Image (tube, rainbow, N blue to C red; front, top):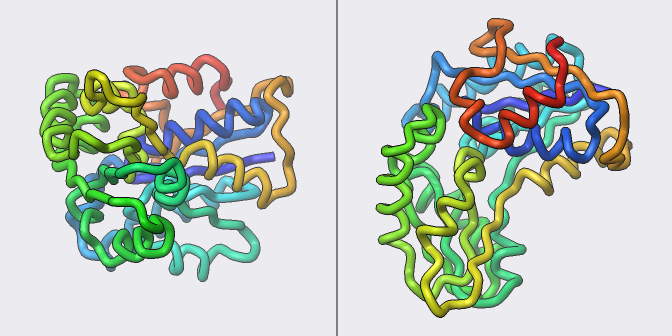
Length: 261
């Protein structure tokens, strides 16, 4: 069994780690585009072109499924990716976890890139899934780039700026960019208000990983052995996990559990 994941950068780590925890024996292919980052400011057509190149590099490894572990690529490129690769290769997109966040009751904030915040795509998801919940869209300029580079000071500044835009009565935060899940606890610490109920964070990694396994008819088996292999592709080139990935628990898990391919 082999599952490929694609993203502009290391935002694919949370979903890859979730797959690894659910099925340690699955071989993983991580395909990203550090040479083309960031994708957010690009036109939809340009994003689609970059996403196709990254997806094709992953598909060359003949995986059983491809996870688009990127909200931006899912917004702009998912129909094109599916048109080219399916049905031979199932393609699983990433959608912000608005529905479970709203189901918890209370006001909700959606942290996302400036390009996604206020977009017709996100507004449509809010209309479809938020119900009567009060939703605040919070742009997070620079946060994905700071996470990508493991720039601690820049992460702190970007998180603090977004937290300042988050209403104090918010009960749940939707992490609307896969990069943000790598710093989830830092976001929680910045948004949690003294005397308020515990803040709920809603990422997509676990649900997307589980959906990918369902699509290929595989049930979770967390104790499965032996560990699967790991292949890393950076802008079409075979490589090792980039050094910034080692700043995060998810990167360390993949490096420790996965023998090199």
